[in-house]
Image (cartoon, rainbow, N blue to C red):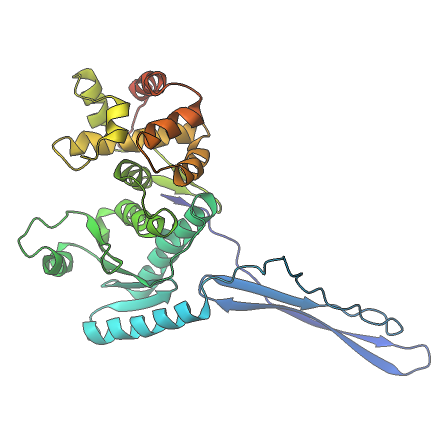
Amino acid sequence: MEHDRPMPSTIARRVVRLLCAAGVVAGAAVWVGAAYGPGLLAARGSSAGQTASPRPPEATPGRNERRPEVYPPPELVEACSKHAAAVRREQKGKLNVISRPPFVVAGDVALARLDSYARWSVVRPAQSMWKAYFEKKPTDVITIFLFAGKKNYVPYAKRDYPRGNQPYFGYYMPTDRRLVMDINTGTGTLVHELTHALIVYDFPDVPTWFNEGLASLHEQCSVKEDTIVGLTNWRLAGLQAAIVNGALRPLRETVTKRDFYGRLQGANYAQARYFVMYMQTRGLLRKFYKHFRANHAGSGADVKAVEHVFGKKIEQVDKAFVAWVKALRFDRR
């Protein structure tokens, strides 16, 4: 993934002393400050006018005006702090732990490396998704465990998968809002599972095909300040093979059948990912998400949403989508 890092914020303070013509010293101070909290940057400033002019009254929100949202709220910051302390006690010093509300990130890597993961592979993608898609943000603590290799990842994963078959890269446990990763396999799975953890607050009834399609899109992506752009990845080969072999089912069936994790699971993931990416390249993904979120209920809602956004029958959309997929290339280097 590519990360464009923001310029660091600065704190400046300057005092301006004004001398009156009569020789009397009058003081006026200008403060430019920034109050920092995890995930929050609030700036406050005041400027002095001429001493002979009264200060204008401060503007106050009208009855129908909404104050800017403060996120994360103090109670969530406190909850994350307490949870981070609890994780430290539970792990008995075996893991480093960082609180970045609404996230608590723990891992068996050096603190500086863990902080880098938290900043650029958790908080930054989350902020981009909130700006691009999700209007509602988490109200609970989301815990993320990052293990550098199978040595510590597999024993931990066995707690959640006692019968074996632990996911190779990582997984998300929605029951307690917990992500677990073998981070040595890359950060793509982390952003994939992070998408699942965030979308549920904004679109709780999101159909599986779109949930997995959007999450899979973020497996290989470029993260900007206000957007997150999916790129081609390893799933393309399987999708193109399914097209050549006539094994790819119609798009109408994929978005209406509720059997995503059935025998065609691999092809379903690839088809959903690249259809979401197709909407992205056509500049329709944000529009589709917002329309679909508001109109996802009822029989045939998925098909109606696709046809509404594209302005075409889904069969026409499907034909153009397949032609687009055939022309794609993925360089594994």
